[in-house]
Length: 112
Length: 114
Image (cartoon, rainbow over all chains, first blue to last red; front, side, top):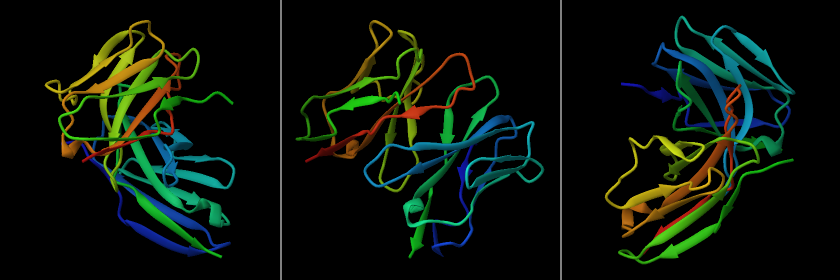
């Protein structure tokens, strides 16, 4: 069946380091992917998205990489800050649908 | 910046009682979603509306859950009767029908059933 999963449940980094959060997806019919950040007690916050016709997209301090060959998605955060500490979810959307399928999340802990 | 509004933020109820959550999406967003998020997991879609119509409620436990969006704007999700296993965060999200379809989430309602 469909699944979106993450390789690492918790990632601990030092302030200033670069962080990489990984995600594997299984549905080759997915055409759109989103990364969300969720802080404790809050709803998920949109970070960055990427369409399946792209393999890289950059935002402010964040980059998303998509490897459709191995069905792998990653979120890179440059110069990680304590405010980046949160749970990060990837989500996928199948072609023709608006429904998002979320993974279980990776907790990012940033130490000062 | 426009936001999705939800109320209440927290709700404690006893099992077998009825409970209701309210959501007001971003103005102009035709698509509205209700998700349930169990602690430590990603959100799971319960129901999706396009304007006032339900387009996906395949994961909604219809024996106890109901959702409506009568005028195609705000929405209410109801649980009756609540069960212990319903304790979770209930998230509302909205998106534009015109693309690129990213969903914007509200702060959620944390439900505890005792």
